[in-house]
Image (cartoon, rainbow, N blue to C red; front, side, top):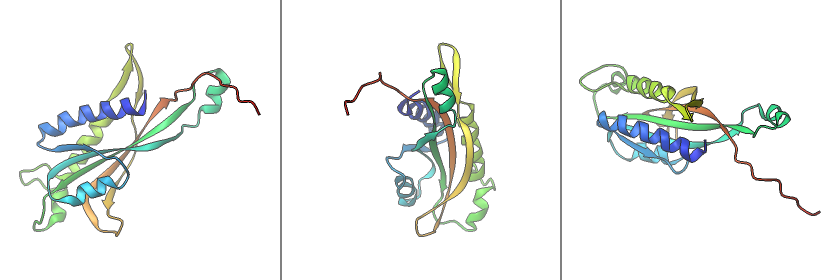
Length: 168
């Protein structure tokens, strides 16, 4: 599973679901773009995906000893926003239902949806996302936005090319 395929599959699944809920889905090009998109203007329910790099998953020594390709933990961030513009008592919009699904419920729905994805190949499940936490989104200046950032990881095998000798 390449990072490209992981993001594509996640975007396809979430975009369809979010559109059914009258929301929009975006993919950020860098770590600052989600904040730019969220601060842009009120747009209602929005989901933004970000490829947040990868890190060793702790099993590389074992894999190398057994001749298995090394693997990494691929990090994906999913921003969930419900920007309603100026409203009276905005804190209650996090959990009260006044005709629109509250933000905390949207976060719960998106988290459940991501965790339900199973990446399969030839009928065998290769991986599922691991939940790594949730935090409120704030601007670099510390201004809170009506959004939460969900963090997920999924183990992926690294592409490794044939050994190439280098003359020293």
